[in-house]
Amino acid sequence: MSKKIILKDFYQIESVVFISDIDFSFSDKNFLKSLEPSLEELIDGEKFLFNNYYEFESKVNKHFKLKDEVPKKYKKPKRVVKKFKKHRRQYFGYINKNGDHILRIHLLKPHKKHEYDDESWKEYMFFSSSTQFYLINLTQRKFIYKVVGLDENGNPEELNTY
Image 1 (spheres, rainbow, N blue to C red):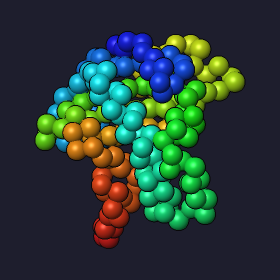
Image 2: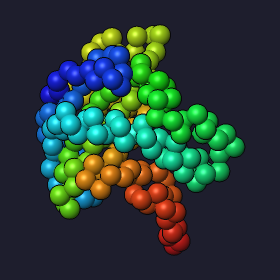
Image 3: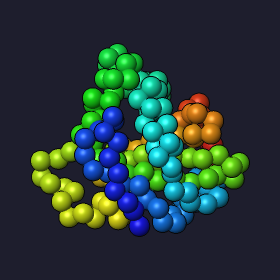
């Protein structure tokens, strides 16, 4: 179950906050229970994303040795706000076993094909090739990296060899 929301300072299009129980143990071994994020937590998460987007994306690009650098203009939060102004959001919240509040933001890129016209994006966690998602530990004020080869703090993981 979800409810509609628009944070006009950050984006111009209808988005949703999921308020039903979703078991995130499939993606986080420290998942404890679902949480409906408060308005304050949504605003905190958006601000954190905009203020730290460049650092996050740069770390991921460096890890994968991508030739394209993240444009330096995204060091400025206002540029990141502009980049994502027309993206729909899906917000999910949960508490981990440490008691930290985690916010998961799905950014659904706008499409001309009306990919979201069927309204199912309001009821189900939506993934597509155009979906970006960010996990933010609101309690510790940091990203949680869900990237192959990086630990949750964004540091290289040691490879297990068999």
